Length: 281
Image (cartoon, rainbow, N blue to C red):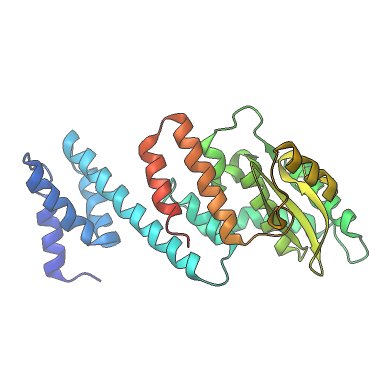
């Protein structure tokens, strides 16, 4: 809760946003930025009531910087938390582009998928049969699919876009699959494979089989992973076959988004994504 003095200062600073001297304006911007999220209400109110293009541009820029820093702080806190909840990480990554994203909306859409799968599962099913059920629900009933037409589509990296369009890449679809499987108590984990992200069914510490979320959850054995690694002319490291941490999965998500923005020529966005990536230790 801001004091009356702080409220007055914020309003006074906002009234100076048309300052023509750049050096003076920079000090005004820094002072507004120092208020963090508390300044957003005042800035948004000024945005709605101003018809000055310069003020509009400056306000939007300050709000963006404040929100970026808030996301960075939340990512750092998430990274330092031992739990590293994957859904929370995915939502935080998506908030870079969609800062007003509501977790409750995401949970409601995920809940529908989980319930549909839960109704088809029972304890008598084998591991492969359970995967067949999840594949059917995700890729047939709900119609999720990989975007094979635009490899660099930046919108495919955000959970709200994925749930709305039903189109994703190997990372976003893989994360979705892991989140759903976890809620169904099915041991599916991510595999940090170079240039690809696959999943594995792991029981008692051993990988029973692997699956490709980008290709409708198709199941394949370990030797196909070995063939893929040989094709890339890489040394077969244990990490290419074993589950990786959720923190690493979100790092991969940001790395992919960084590459996407770079390839699309959005260098400012790429720089901001790199800044967010650096918050994950």
